[in-house]
Amino acid sequence: MIKKVSYIRLFLIYCFLTHAANALDNEIYKKIDVFGEVLEKINKEYVDEIDQSKSMDSAINGLLQSLDPYSSYMSPENYNLMQTETSGKFGGLGIEVGMEAGVVKVISPIDDTPASRAGLKAGDYIVKIDNVQVQGKSLTEAVDLMRGPVGSEIELAIRRKGEKKTLTFFIVREIIEVQSVKSDLLDNNIGYIRLTSFNENSSDQIKEKIKKLEKNKNVKSYILDLRNNPGGLLSQAIKISDFFLNNGEIVSTKSRKSSENRKWFAKDGDLTNGKALIVLINYGSASASEIVAGALKDHKRAIILGENSYGKGSVQSIIPLKNKGAVRLTIAKYYLPSGKSISEVGVLPDIEIDEDSDEFKIKTISDNQLNYAIKLLNG
Image 1 (tube, rainbow, N blue to C red):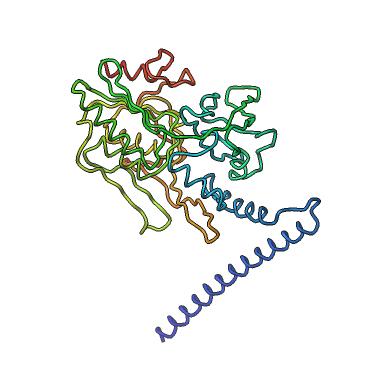
Image 2 (image 1 turned 180 degrees about the vertical axis):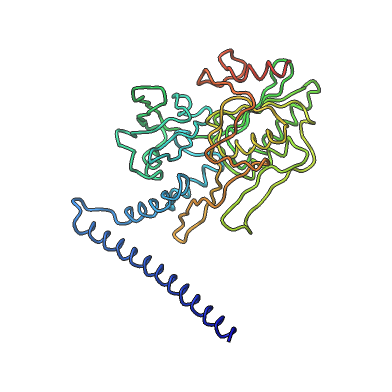
């Protein structure tokens, strides 16, 4: 009798779950029918003739961007451009952008590009592109508006925190060749390494620069400058963090599927032999920059100096599609060795110093953060 009651309960649970699943499927199919009906009405009744292909792209983008600011759809053309950008050479303005509350936001201008020379800053909001209102458009649509022939001029209307009026910038598009690593030997034998992005060659370049600086037996300390570095490839952030560590966790990712959670650890061998290290960050330091700064801070390997970083702590995977396009989809979040998430919080510096200049030139009195770092290292 007990077994019979148990079988009945299991059968009822099965019927309930099957009904719930069927009801959910039916609800989704109804929504798809509504979408088709709306598209049909637009095609028949809208005041202007529309490009149905672009409408579908916008619909796909709308779905993805309702998830978070970083998920998006890339057409075959945009996917091809993205692959070119990751390799370190592309045409454009030289800015990394994202979405915030439906507005296009500058994550960071890249060093020595039209955008940085014009004076764009991390945190700027782009409200108009060539007099076209940006609010309400997807990130992909806004990026498309910013693309154009090399040598052509673009007008950007910018809202900036602390400025009452809209700022206008006229910028000429260029071929952007990202030299992601620069180095110098500062006064009192301080090795200075400036990293502007994490592309596929960054770790090799940094390794070469460190080896070159280490040949000078008098080098006693280092400054790693990650200001206005919008990030890039996770693999590069892990390798570069490892250059300054002998062991320990660098970063972990947690995703929806526990089987896909991962951790990365440093291998034995600090390329700088444990020399004093200061890492410079600001609000334009994002993603991979935050992984490096956060790992070195948590292991007490470096003093982090500057401003609170941007707070982009999510992992985007580029998933190719059958039409040769791709989906950029958030699949996980980054966690520092301390267990803290970077998302929307960023990395808090050990010593907080506001910037007093748009220029980040080595050995100039106007560079507040760099001079303070040099002072610290000189004792």
